[in-house]
Length: 131
Image (cartoon, rainbow, N blue to C red; front, side):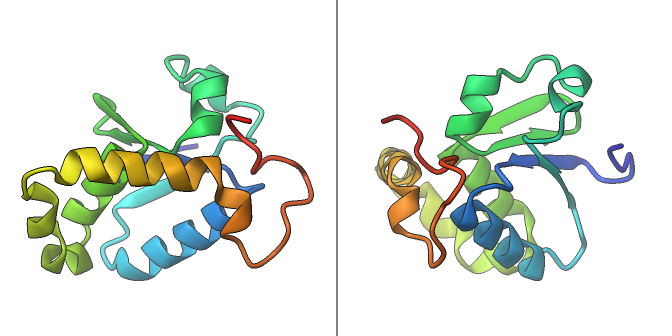
């Protein structure tokens, strides 16, 4: 179950090497352990969080804040960067004109091609989204 002392729940694809690597890197910088990580492969996840849609969570990372706000894709990554202490050096760049548009396009490009960016081959086929 979710740790109620934490205000952020990140939903990620644990069968994807790039997703696992990204999670690991974020955890290293999340010194205050603000984020609870939940695998979308958890069979109870859609029952526990009925507002999540299976197809959507398979295509992009989702971040739930305070059981109220749901961020997806680039918006989720941006929110994480804003909240973790190490992100304070990068966060101002996220407010430059055009940053949201560029960030969203970059996120979608990486998500569609994530099987090309990982060190280990994606053997389950979970990395092949949007094809």
